[in-house]
Image (cartoon, rainbow, N blue to C red; front, top):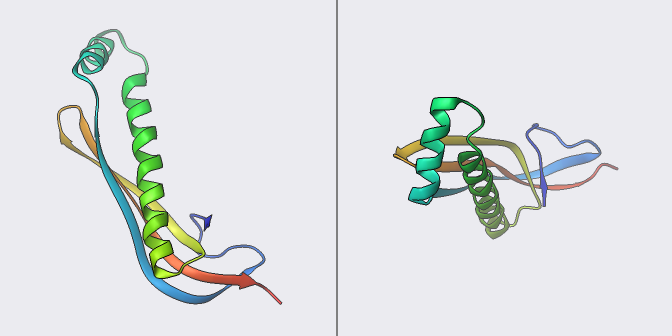
Length: 107
């Protein structure tokens, strides 16, 4: 599956647009790691626990989006975007979405 943030893929032509594919997940961190991140906000620095949480959430959301696109018969996703939102303290939703298409090599 080719996944791009652009509306075209070099060397390929879109032969069919199948619709929007999406995948999402809600991730939360262990309370101990949440406390450590809270303390880090006092002294400054990267909140590595949350960075890792969002990285894991992106991967899950991408995988679910790809599954959705494959169910439609797609072999590529274009215009892929991410959106995140806080659901509650220590938890975030990650949404990945894009246009599922069928592509082939340009002749």
